[in-house]
Image 1 (cartoon, protein in one colour):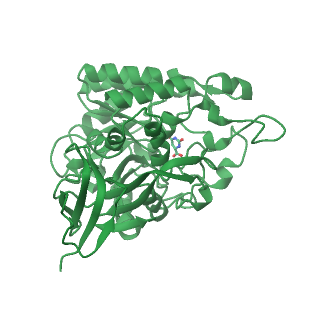
Image 2 (cartoon, protein in one colour):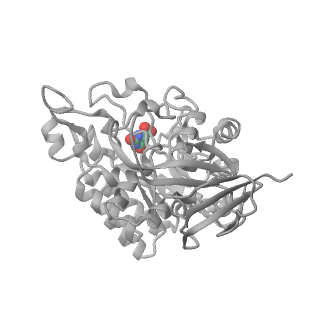
Image 3 (tube, protein in one colour):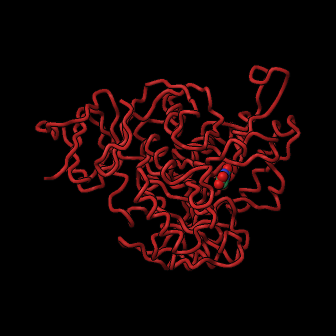
Length: 448
Ligand code: DOR
């Protein structure tokens, strides 16, 4: 007997078809079977979505699942559960594991473990260079054949421009399983000679705290280099976690020149600034202090940078929102700022944080949903691996997220599904939450 699930009476938003209306979503045998005002009329069992927003499951191009090697920070099981709680039904897993995902065996391990223990879909990203050392190319074709959807040395840039050129040339010749040509190379743009020992944005907060800064130019110089290499090779470069006014402008110009450049921005770079590093007397009786949970790479920058990232997201310079979910253990953050690990555990707060932009009237809800669903799919060409993901088209995977955009909740990291409780949002009240997540027709998170 075929299995079916009906989600009835919600405000269905599907950016691909432009649908924004009250309707039922019928899922049969793990796939979208119908979306219409009365698709669920006959259904015996239905999820009541009255008053909720129903949209395609979110897709994250940038998640750190930490397994293999750093299971004390996160596992594929805990990370995908955190993703489901955050409304994500697909995450692309970054390769900065131990060992790094530079062989087919590691890509296969991630896929196998996700299949056995994961709550949602995991699409692995392979390394650009062996061991992420930046010296010798990894076997890109082997990684692609094993299931890698993109390449990145994430956490580290590919500093050698010649090696980056070769990586782009090879990646552009590889064929994704469902058609097309070329896999993207994702670059963490940071010129190490400029970022040097910097631990936060180079600006007034760093001066006040006596911390070494990372100038915006550290990112922008490598974004400019990568754009030049995209022009030289005709191969796609995807710029990870854009954080500065200048990067947005460079990418905007590259796109208008027709270059194959795509980009993502994180919720924290859209909504927070370097001031989040500073804890005032209210939080720290006795004086000024810092919050290592706001230490992230690239660093949180100024509110002007955040505004430029948002403008870029809205005018298409930036293709999508990506969490850069970077879970760390307590001891990685409970230390001096210089010593603390970089990263924010972001899957479970992504929607609530981004919805602040909607509540402030700066973004329309359908536009936000687009940047969390079909935006990331198109940026990395993920529909050349899983057909129709990021949509509610008939025949698409039955991946659906139910949202209450108005519900207020307080961020309590100790209640995260992620092992990483490292968030600068602890104690903050967010408006809007994920109510339920359906993956391939199965309810994998239900908080109704
Ligand atoms: O803050 C970050 N943390 N940025 C990165 O690029 C890597 C990540 C991590 O793996 O912890």
